[in-house]
Length: 271
Image (tube, rainbow, N blue to C red; front, top):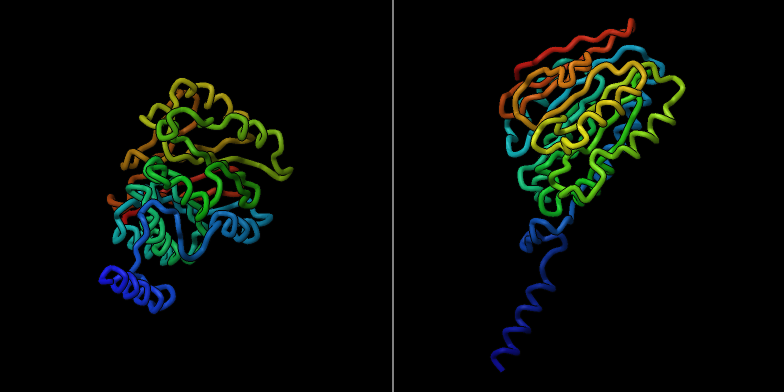
């Protein structure tokens, strides 16, 4: 009788809880997310509409925000204060452990940006069920967009996290993209989380990867994060520079300006 009474009391408590009550905390890797989904697709539409027909751009690059929420908040404030940034590219590692709440907490900070942003997937974002949460919140890990006459290629390069069971980098994706470029494409920028010869990249195909991306028209430079410090590398001694963006912990981000004459400049901004 006592067991029946306790069960009835428990059911009464559950049924009388208000809708959306936070007393029930789901498993951290259950992939249930609240709020906006498919963020990259929505923001790409905004970027392409705002930059249509343009031959000059200015965009900011941030990376590896992970558990550094205050530092991310500072970067967002700095970017918003400039008033000259067209959009922001986040190079991945939004989270530290791929936990659903971490994705939601970082999205809350990035939603404060006054300009559209897109996010790549980092190796920490692949932990647990993080890749599934990223897919739901941001979209596919390989994607492209066009800002004026510049084609941006955003890639998943976290081969180690997938135990080499998935095509990373995805040469099929690159091949199809190169063969179907928009007619107005005048130059290209490549973005990734882990660059060739890092611990996450499939370095068996590093040189093949470089050969593939060199087929893009007027390839300007490549962007990467992951190593948590800002640096510039000519990895293959072929003139293509890889710009590494430091982590949010370093309180700095990059700003690139693509000019009408086909040149570019970059700045390291302290925040």
